[in-house]
Image (cartoon, rainbow, N blue to C red; front, top):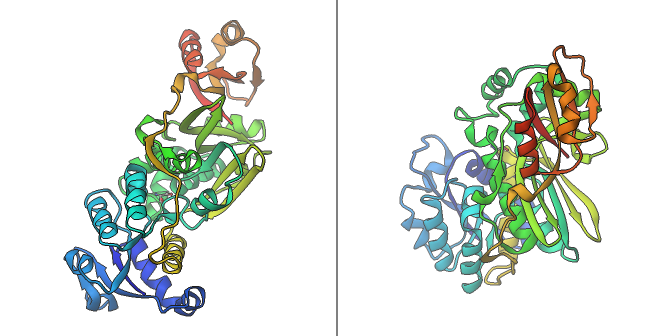
Length: 399
Ligand code: HSE
């Protein structure tokens, strides 16, 4: 079984390494010799063994009838979408780690793969090395999924964990994360929640079998979280995390990415550092949590190569993935119900209950202000109340 890898960056290089290191495991698991015979990249890699199989021209791979499976680890949608589409149309299976591609074009690529009796797999696109895509497709199939809550981004989880442990400011910890290579030079996609947004869009599409447009998902990042927020959270035995969430209530699907105050009874409370975890709730199953390395070269490559194993086992045999191109309407965000933690200046304390009704007060010992948690309120109503109350400092949703 000959594999071509598109993009020799961190994950692409990881895929080559996993296939070489675990060649015996792959042989045992597929009954075939699995080898990388071509690598596509714009760059050259003098001294690296892949230089001998490197090409700068995608047609060398597309038109090579000896290549059965294509691994796409380029990232982005241009030119990844055209490359993957053309590979599937040529009758080659594709295994991709690319969440931008899957979130934007998953349904279309799955449909082409079906038509051509090949496969489009994307286990590594959410949760890095954590098995979550296949469990949603193949395992949690007897349930109505009522909620997905996920810590879907390692960079932000690392930053929030460090802020919690050290009482440090966001900007300071972001710099450390960049120096350690966890956060990118331009950290926007991670810290503003855009990366997690694509991932929860993919999981929600699979949970309900229809295309979720990630642009319909309310998305809020972690840049405004402060050490004072953690002081309040700790006071009530909670952590501050950022979740990708989708929830089905009375037949409507709600979704958002936002920071959350998470109490220590929640299994996601203790997911720290760069780890990811996804808690799926089914109406029969209850909760099932999937935990592990959500990013990184070898964990992510391990998931991509597991897709390669599946593609080898099912060569010319399409595995049905229930993800229809028909859009799934995400219910208006204003109608989603949440509880909110609010910080307000001391001078406005007496006005709080006339605006929000009965609340749960939290005293974190910070002078000049106080904090409280509301009952469940619709987002639109909360926004009106928050505006009405003078002296508000910040608000975070409560999981
Ligand atoms: N930037 C992502 C993260 C990489 O930090 O989780 C994995 O998708």
